[in-house]
Length: 310
Picture 1: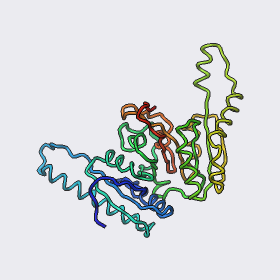
Picture 2: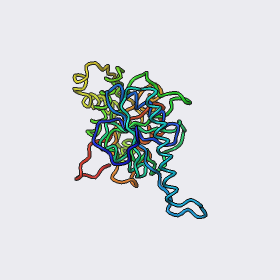
Picture 3: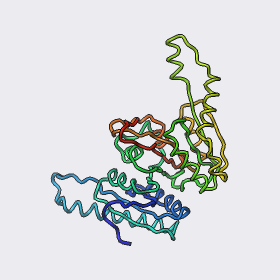
Picture 4: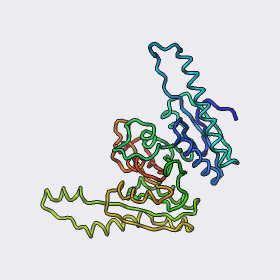
């Protein structure tokens, strides 16, 4: 199939960002299986990296460099197409070379996608993600859910056993994350573990300044009620999904990461930010992307033009 160059089209395909990292092919295979199981098409997309306008002491011209970068993109897309065909030979695959940089290209593709899948390098215990990276930008700004996939252990494929773990934050912005988690649990015939984390460290510090005391038992009872409210009605919509509820007194990222090594997918909601400069590296979604061993799906809440996003 020839590589198409151009703009995204409105569709419900599974879209995969393709680059030179080995994790990219892991993501392609994971996405190809998803597309096959759900009867969707697979759209493999490579955005052309920025080429310096001037490169001192280089014999190649700017046009030569553009040609080489385009050829590399074609080659990477060909390898990705072959990887998809190995695991899901019946899936319709489209390969697209876009002239924009990866972030802009994939964000544009996300507007018409069912889900955007990105490969994440092997697990490293780093303190955060580099600000402005493709992963961080798309987690905050993509127009569809974004799944981050890394090799599970060494070069192994991501897990296919275990529960779907859903982080429930108790806000209205998490509704889309709940929807995706139930859909995935139903498709995968997997149990769903809904985890709601809370911690009183912040309130305790404020109360101590005033000489007040926090009633931990009352707070925990409230958190259980909050989780029940957020999940109300979902079991009736998906009667085939076995649901377990868990309230944990722990920071959200820590509590969710405790389950990431035994899950096949971790789903979290994110409100995103108004601009790249405002991204908070310590947020729950950013932290689990950086450290979770299983694939992570980040689902942004619905946006409105009249409100500033957190």
